[in-house]
Length: 402
Image (cartoon, rainbow, N blue to C red; front, side, top):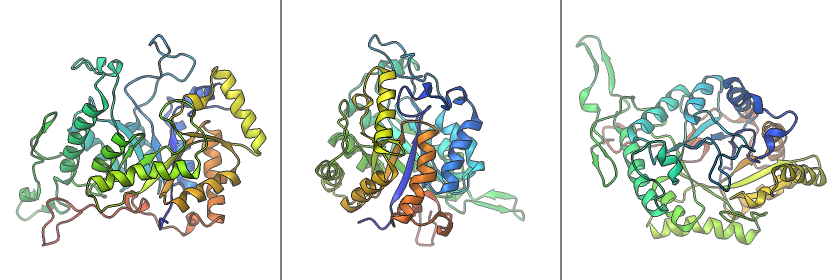
């Protein structure tokens, strides 16, 4: 059983259900407002959630059967990394984990943007690493056709993740010396070139951002399949999985057997890679929280009717329309199976994100699954996830380390 159990809230649009924006009280008119995202994230921070992830992609929204933008759901989004950096000063403890794709993005920009977030949040940045597989996304950049298979995309992403890690390590902790007597601001010998040439990317030189508080912010990757699990083991510090999800249609409440087999995907990939490290694995669950099971089921049915299709047919994760006590019970079961935490996808924002913060967190404390927020010291995000401090590849026996 894990020593600590992480609770992460996944934020997307007006909620993960495509019809959530139609509800009375939904924040559909404020989704392009920084004030809205600040309020949502501050609530998670104040009431004790370990981290929030912010969804992003190169598409403005989902497409319909004809390949055109589906105008029945939320279309348009703010850049997740910029939102995270903007809300960071208003928060104290919550981890901020934007989704940043590597498929059409230069590793240098990925590295420096996330380093900046780690600085402005005082060590609370993370990175949800994502690939962008569609020709529609590729067309926005005009450099390649897109539509590559998962194997090719993951091969490129492995190289990008390696380069980003090298850039994060390129400044020693004590590279800035500010020696007024000699007039030297930095010690040049404590800045190292990333020096990487691969099949897909090549980088020469160092980051422009000094080493950040965590050294290397934790990397999160979603593993739906055995191939994705191998990729996550190669690149990520924290692995997200979807027990009960089918990678397409018919996502359902996960059974104990499904949850075990999904966790085994990651453990098998670690063994195949010869890794002694057992990464924290978090279960992704889509949730709608009601005052009773019947009320939650009716609310989900109403949303599905408005959308014209059951959300379970669209989701890659299990979909739980449930109560707080039942959700606590399912979370306890996942912990007993060896999961290190959960990432909850609220179907309605702010209704379900608020219920996670105001109702679920204290219920988990009462159940002994979390410490009371007042008794937990502020910690960097690596510590929150139970990940060891990042030691630079350039660290020496003289003690230059992350």
